[in-house]
Image (tube, rainbow, N blue to C red):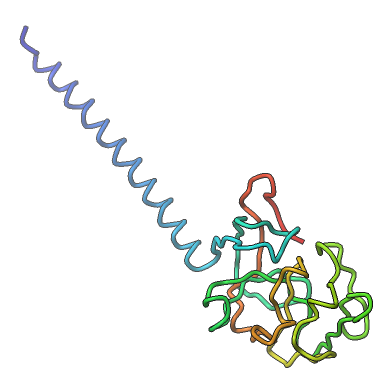
Length: 193
């Protein structure tokens, strides 16, 4: 049986509608892709945790959403930083304990961290500092220079941080951003404290 002229037109119209819809889906997909590239290039980053220095707040292999947009470092913030010559120039995750002008001390008897004469309330740490092994190799008290921060891991006895001269006081320019949320594992999804 031969197709009639009307049937040919209907078939051609259906093929055109299909390719038009396919093109529309392709445009939408491209727009979404461009949106994500712009957002993850200029506004936020996904960065993974390597190690246990921030346990129990962050676990090894957690993935975090990090932003540096209009960020001003503050005590208690969890930040990602990179210091040339430290940890193979890889990003590390630490908590800001003190900012420029603050004085940091560690009580050698109790392992308490003291900032500006006040013992910090730190419900987020794994355990207090084992003062015999983990006081670091710097002398206390330490005053943080302006434009720098003093950082520590929440897992105080398994963290190389500002207590050690290898990292020391961290220039704020080395901060890549502060942690907004944990995105993986999904059971830990949400903001960090």
